[in-house]
Length: 571
Image (cartoon, rainbow, N blue to C red; front, side, top):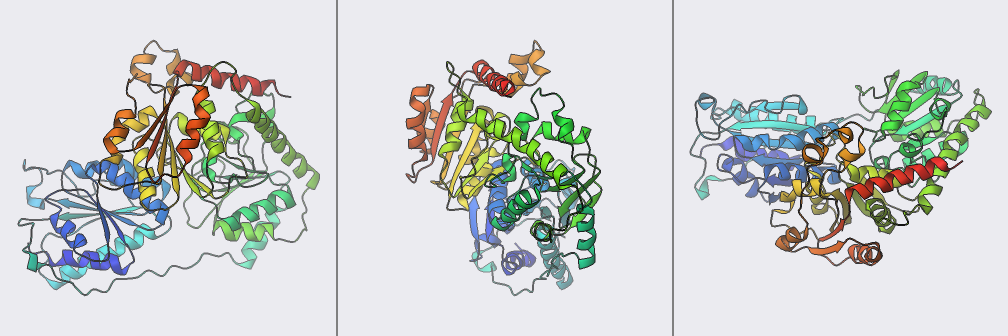
């Protein structure tokens, strides 16, 4: 093997403070694998399944808020990274993907494990680099080092995201042991400015802020720090601004936060949407889960919509965007919440608007606190009790489909402290929910609790196919033996093909998987067992646990419809 430039790649990464590497086994990628594993500064983990590996890397990067290196061999291995790369792209999570490749002259020549890998991830990476095969000349080595440093800078620049480097290698791929040597490199470090608005800009914004009577703050997916929560509390209390967010917005500790919009905005109350139309809409964060909130704001548009983020291009989710305020959330909230009390807007109108939101939120919480279907035991009750039993200082992971929707209907109580909620809502797929939670558990010491449905759980079963223990991972599996969400969606639930082609019945249980990987396993199919099993499930026994709740899909639908009916009866 004669790839001196490859020895410099880990050195560049180490200088730029990257520590974690996920390696998928393969031969063509041997130069990369050897270079990183022989470098003393890296924690290298081997994950055999590329799709799972990429989501595990993403879960780690999400927790650490720093790039994770992801390595695979040539051919279809690289394609299996794509679902996680797309999710990382839309969730703005930094990943550095290093794919090994065949030399250019062998592409499309029917050589083994050879596909068109250059720019294989298309528009779902921030940048893509093809590193030259021949690196004998010093300028070529300088070029590859520069590309590595540039890739890391792009990945960590706001908005963060995945970056791809493709490495064509010729044989021989394996060095003699004495071929490896430490190299001296100088990495290019990016020093980024802190975005702050000038006094004149803030004065202009505050003047506009004070000209609107009905102001609304909507928080999208993201983790809100304690200082931002305090500013939101001041805005809610001092200025009577409704602060709205799904469970994935992480504003559940906000005392007067509106965290159940999907429930009451989906009710049959006449004129409710119109009465909640804002004059000024302020948004933060990424995606919003609530379909009903999006429908309401798209139909009853604000006069102005400001989205606050520290980069320029923003999504126009509600078709009303007028301003992108390029500053940190914390700085914006601080300046707005600490302004002097010199409002020129009609404070009575703002208070009335605030109270409409509060009335609907309180009604929802009242119904939730007392709702229990007298005859039928189902997923709604199980998720509610697990959320109530969550220990403080935990990560809650929500798989897509019904799991995240149940949790969003039910919500977290404000007294639940230091619980961070994560969900793959970038692309909203079920394909990597287990693996993302595994990645989080591998890179954090707190409890990681995953709530998932049976289809998502079994689809991603290779998340556990590796040699690393995750004793801080607990998994609640809602097993109704199929994709029951299709029974609740108007459209597929009216088709004769529903059961066979949409719900896709499956007969698996998680018990055999638990035995295979040495996990503790609990099985519950009755209400009488639930409280005891949840207690055992939450106990810290330093072992991965699975609590499987088996229910009937049709009965789950009846329970959810009963909850909605009970809510609509409330005055």
